[in-house]
Length: 549
Image 1 (cartoon, rainbow, N blue to C red):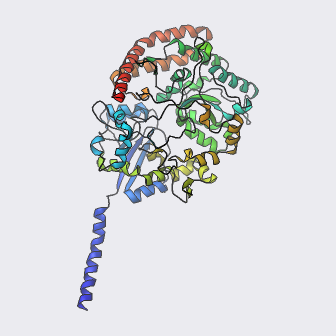
Image 2: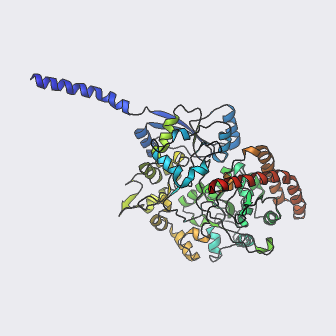
Image 3: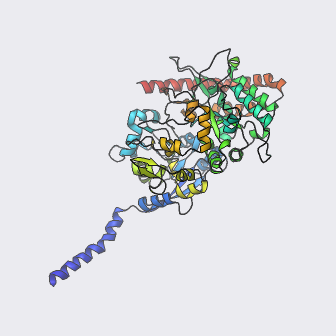
C-alpha cells in the first residue's frame, strides 16, 4: 500500500509540473504589427490560415494596408518613427532602408540556426546580388527565387494587354506591332462602341498614379525589344553594356505621338491621367477597358473579379508588341519581353528597428519557408483546398475557382503575409509546382471552357506561347532594382516628375503642337537624364563585375 501511495504521489507531482514544463517550451503569444505598401483587404476574424499560425506559432497579426499615396505615407511614418514590426515599403522600400528604419538581417541568418533561409539566399550565389556595398541585407526577396524547374505558363510582368473578346472578334488574329494593336482596337470600337448594357467601351487606359506611372513611362523599352530594365535601355551585346535613358531619345517620340493620335480619335480618355489605382482597378473590373500597358501582377484583383463574375471574354491577353519598322528606320525588332528568373530585390518584408523580437521574426520567416508551411500558404489545407492523387497535388474545378473569390480569400488565405514573405517558386522536389496556378494539370484542366476554346482557336496551349521564350538573365539582373538614392534629387525631383508632367501634355495636345512639346520636354529633361544615364551606367558595370568575379 505504501508503495502504491508513493507511486501515486510521484505521479501527481509529475502532472503538476507538466503545465510549467510545457509553458517553458512554448513561445509566448505575441501580436505582430504589419504594414503593407499596397492596398488590400483585411482577413476575417476566423481566417483559418491565420488561426493555424496563431495556434502553432503563437503569433497574431495586426495588419495595416496602404491607403493613399505610398511615398507620402512612408514619409510620415519615417518622420514620426512610426514603424510596425514587419514593414513592406512596396516599390519605395529603399526609402525605408536609407532612413535606417530596417535592421540588417545577416546577423540572424546562419546555416545552423536558419537552414531554410540560408539555402534560400545562398544557393547559386544569390547572396552576391542581394547584399549592399556594406554587406547588409534588409529584405529577403518576396518573389523570384525558383527551386528546381522554372515554370512559364504565362507572362507575369510587363506587356500590352487586350481583352480576349477583341481578339475573338478579329478571327483570333493577334496583333504583333504597335500600329496593328491600335488599329484593331479602333476597328472593334467602330462596330462595338458599347457593351451589352449600353456602357461605352474605353479603348486604352493609362495608369499614371505614383510609382505605378511605369504604365506611362516604360513601354518604349519593350517596343524596342528589351525586357524590363526600368527607365534605361541597355545593350547587352555591347561589352561595355551601353546604358542610356530611352524616354528622351528619338525612338521614344513615335510612341507618344501614336498615343496623341489615339487620343484625338477618342480611344484615350483625359480622365485616365488623373485616375487613381482604385479607380483604375474598378474600370478594369467592370469590363469596359479594352486595352492598356501594365504588368500582370498589378491588376490581378481585376482579373479575379472578372473571372469570379464569369466575364471571361473581358479578361486580358498579354501581347509582346514591338515598334513597326517605320518607327525605327526600317529595322525589324525581335521581342524579348520575358526574362530569366529575377529576384525581386529589396521588395517584401523588412523587420523594423522598433521590433522588440527580431529573432522571432526571422524564425517566423524560417518556419514559413519550410515545405509544410509553404504548402499551407500556397495550396491551403489538404482535403479542403486540394487533394493528392498518385503523388500529384490537384484541385477540383470548384476548389480552383474559389481562389479567385475575394471573400473566400479573406477567410481562407493569409495573403497579406504570404505575398510579402520569402517564398518558394518553381517546383517541389517531387515535381509538383509550388504555385497551384502553375501546376500543369490544374492550369489546363481548371481553365475556363472559354479560355480553353480561345487558346485553341489561337493555336496555342498557354498564354506564354504568344511570347518568345525567356532570354538569359543579364549579369546585372534587371536595372530597375538599382538603388537610386545617390542621385535622389535629380531622379525624384527632376527626371521622374518632368516625365509625369510632360508626357500627358504631349498625348493630349493639339496634333500641331506635338513636335514643339516634344522638343520642350527633351530640352527640360536632358540634364537630369544625363545624370541618371551616367549613374546607371556605372552601377550596371559594378553589378556585372560583381557577378562575374
